[in-house]
Image (cartoon, rainbow over the protein chains, first blue to last red):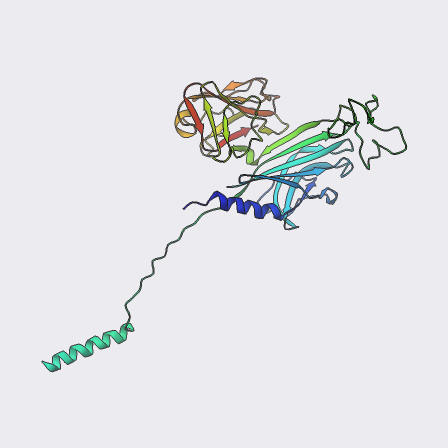
Length: 112
Length: 246
């Protein structure tokens, strides 16, 4: 049996429209499948990401502007679907945010 | 004889009554399963400096009624300037505004290239043929597939290798190419493979049976790979799985 690319792209579209927000946080605890939220999410960083879709792929980009979320050391990022369901969580090396920088976080999601 | 026939008829009728008068129907179930997996492939983080630019809402730059436009070097937003503040371009403020790649984070430290898009292919230094619909990359003799930065963890990358169908073969320091070049990943033994951990400044050949050691093993933190065709045509038609070791 083969699951068609058309079906996978339909699933891609359903996920794409369900992506609601991206958010950054300050905890570097390694992600697990049981995570339901960022460990230390910073509400001020919550923003609607921008999606670009490709063949079975979603590129989702969250932007933290220079005037937002300053003075924090960011270590985690997550995308939420259906408003408050954590879709993925990733930890990264410490990023100290100040007013001279914007932070662009791009997540690639593939429907396999 | 009539009694015998009559009894036979009665027996048949009794059997029919037992079976409900209808033949048995056996259900043969078929069951098919297919998995659909949304995969988090990679996260890329860019930090864009806005120093010198005009920023609405900023308390430092572009403050109305003040001279805080552009940076202190005088590269300000000037109407009519041929260098700065040009409508439709990004030449607003000083040239110090730039995007810096901060991190590239493959899921589980395994980067996967599906060839469904060219975001992680260096299109300037690659001259093979990408087919995003078929998800293949074709290399003829002397042609090159070179990646962009597929991993940047801000700590030194000391080793990397291709995996056979995402199966980890060895996790120690210094890894052997775990499969025959021709049989498992590439259609024919017609390619040479190289890795770089310093964004392409130096390259190390990945050979079967030999440990891969980066030249800048204690400092390099930006991983790239390069595949060069040396005879015939090679079609990469399966995802490339690259494991990164720190």
